[in-house]
Length: 272
Length: 92
Image 1 (tube, rainbow over the protein chains, first blue to last red):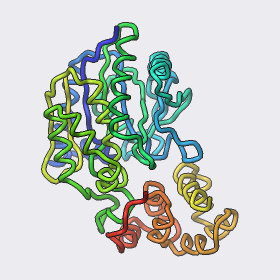
Image 2 (cartoon, chains in turn yellow, purple; image 1 turned 90 degrees about the vertical axis):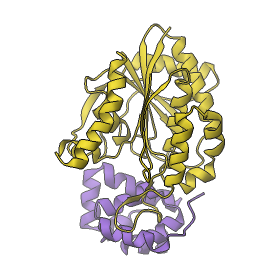
Image 3 (tube, each protein chain N blue to C red; image 1 turned 180 degrees about the vertical axis):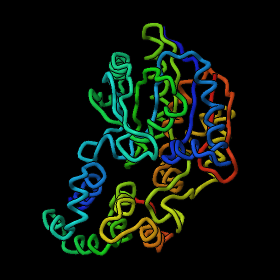
Image 4 (cartoon, chains in turn orange, purple; image 1 turned 90 degrees about the horizontal axis):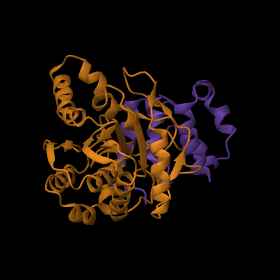
């Protein structure tokens, strides 16, 4: 039986790796915030990292857009989009475990796409850049947080429970679970800031989501994370859905890091 | 289906370097190859990203016209044009 030994959630802003290396005060701050989470993930001695994310229409295209997908390849290449200062490399995937997870989800009446060959974008690469420096094998799991209709938050909780049961049913592994994304973030729509290509339209919603996560209020979080609330929080704010899946998977763990600052649309968090 | 073609154009521009170069060099010729309405073609050639957003082009794809400096756009110009209607509702 596999064991969930740690969980985490972080943003995946593409400039963060370059910023963290840049030697500025802001860069040191970003690096320290990721390091606090990495300490928990690395300290768990996990031998596989399940990373939950939303593809930003890079891995998949709208010709055939999955609500859920699991990668069961032996490796993936990424980033397939621009992450300043981070070159595309091969990332090791626990492909057999990914395929087993897919099978057990289907048996529980979830029907994710099984991807046998994939590239991955910044939403996978940036969190792993900071949290998985030693290249522990990963299993990418995608949740549609980009293209309506999104899966409901309640369904994402049920997916989290199904993933947890599936992992517990698999041979002994030490599993860390990482959610990637923000709670309020807009890219490309009229709600970006006028002087840059993104914005945080609903920081108060991000603070509410953080509070619910901090106190384990998953019922309230999933009740309040409606399609309307997510749409109002920005064009990529469906990235809260991987966090909800992660929170349900690790519901028996205790929060050890919850780093959110007023006005931000994201958080750096860990459970163990 | 035309909006899907525009979404595809944005996707290809960010994942196919040859297509990106062709779109930069000969935007009119490349757009002529697509099954677009005349008004959609005009909006693309003039970089009218707000009109394209209102048509339903996905913002995560549309923004790539600005980041890749296509169709006369720059990141700054994209941001200025798309925020001209801050009260536009999110796409359903």
